[in-house]
Length: 201
Picture (cartoon, rainbow, N blue to C red):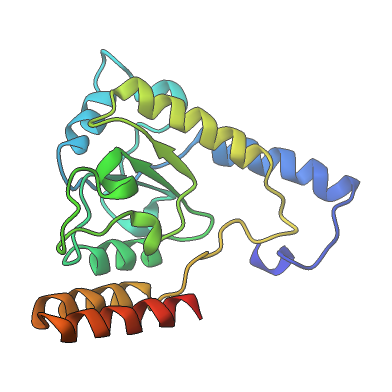
């Protein structure tokens, strides 16, 4: 249905089709089998019979990004892992959604270091953030409910997802870290002021 996107204004026909498509999309979210750190244990626990993620139609964890429409980023995203996360996201077909699960994937958590990406939303657009360290399965279920509410507001007349950040942000971040590591003393201060001036302009 990609030929429909951005072609028509919202009308009665599109609204009716929207209802059917959104119902199908929100009732069968297939997450990617993908975990990075301790939050992944809670995500795995959510699929057990005690919590039963199948109630939300999301029990089919797919082994391939080509078959997934939901990425649950559960855990710390390091700079070494960031390009892999971005590549997996790019391989997922449209429409696709992202849940940032836990403090580490949302804002870096307690790891305010040169090796940790301070928020996965620097490389992929995030639809729902889950708080906690680690969040319980119930928190993940609440995020799924909020995502289903978001899918309900979608329309075929507009593209479902769009990258809200520049693709070169990770490279800029890495360059700033290399500058901080290689320079010391007044040279580092001058270079830091130069980087800050570039960001403000």
